Image 1 (tube, one colour):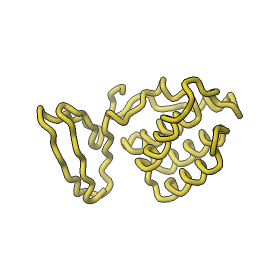
Image 2 (cartoon, one colour):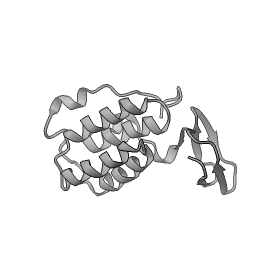
Image 3 (spheres, helix red, strand yellow):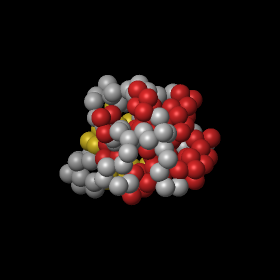
Length: 148
């Protein structure tokens, strides 16, 4: 993440290597110089109980990798498994797009891509249409020791 620029709103929270940090009362701009830092803006975070569809589940798993709470290889396997159960519009294209990002361990880009698709989902999409047992995949419940 060398050269990553974070633009923070007043009082915005983010997690850096498992530590929750809050911005002050003004906008801020930070540059992260260290490669391999685990950074998650909490406004981008999804709670485990919200991961009710294959896309949301994949997003949550990618989020855990971004936060450093799940090993990259394990996260790749879990994201792929979650997306196997997605059969919505453009499912094959979504799997290919996510897979190319997973190949580079670009979990934040996976989150951004899936976030756009999730925003376009109907209010009540069918959860796990292909494989109802996919919802039994265990998910970590916390980030950095703190529940989201």
